[in-house]
Amino acid sequence: MPVEYLSAEQEARYGRFATEPSPGELEQFFRLDTKALGLARAKRRPATRLGWAVRWGTVRMLGTFLTEDPTAVPACVVRFVAEQLGIDDEHFAEYGARSQTAYEHAWEIRDEYGYREFAAGEAGLREFLAARVWTSLEGRARCSTGRWCGW
Image (tube, rainbow, N blue to C red; front, side, top):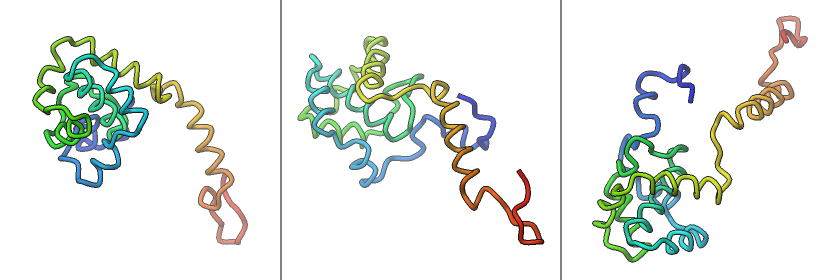
């Protein structure tokens, strides 16, 4: 993803947990809904159930999957999700045993929830934003004569 418009601090924080999520953020991003609960519980092992559910919440909160280390998640997140699944949070340490599992879970979450790579939607987003700017008063400026200027 292009990051040239980010500050050095923003770039360093991108795709990572900069701080522990607040209780409100845990509720907003990591509270398993009926669909997510069913998909997580369909996994065979406790570690994969917990890992899948943590990845689901992580992409919702960060807007991206953790790719370098999918287990680089604050302990409070793991505990919060584990409680919902009725699993001991210590199982999360086993999640990285098979590296392909994290990728498979990311692909499944993308398919189930319709997430896509930014590049796939970039052109549509640019068109949408350009149309919004063009039709809004914020996108145009008045000259000193009181008429619309520019563009």
